[in-house]
Structures are given as C-alpha cells and as structure tokens.
Image (cartoon, rainbow, N blue to C red; front, side, top):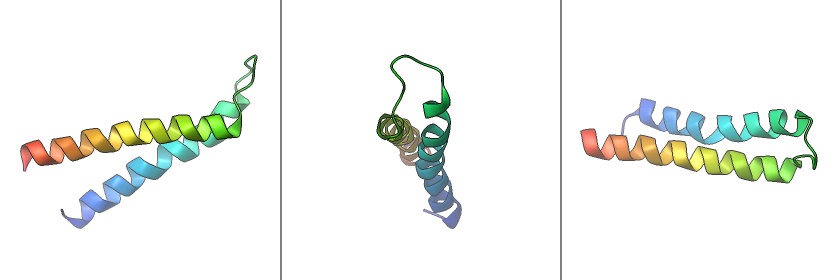
Length: 61
C-alpha cells in the first residue's frame, strides 16, 4: 500500500466518528442520541467505509 492509501484509510477511520460525535447529539430527537451512541454509530459507519476501501484495493490491485 502506498502512503496515499494509509492517509485515505486514516481519514475514512477518523472523520465519520468525529462527524457523528459532533453532529448527531444536536439532532432534536426523543429520546436524544447520546454521545456514546453517536460514537458507536460513527465507528460502524467508519468500519463499513474502510472495508469497502480495502476490498476495492484487494480486487483492483
């Protein structure tokens, strides 16, 4: 893997978690989304994005 691949995986792993952590608790919802639940959702979203990226790398290398 090249440097760009590591950089892209780092971004795909971190950005969804940070975005969900900061944005989801602000949504006016009953019951409210806790910060812990938002981080879990962001981690799940991040894992899916990283898996797609890795599968794409393996298939097209």
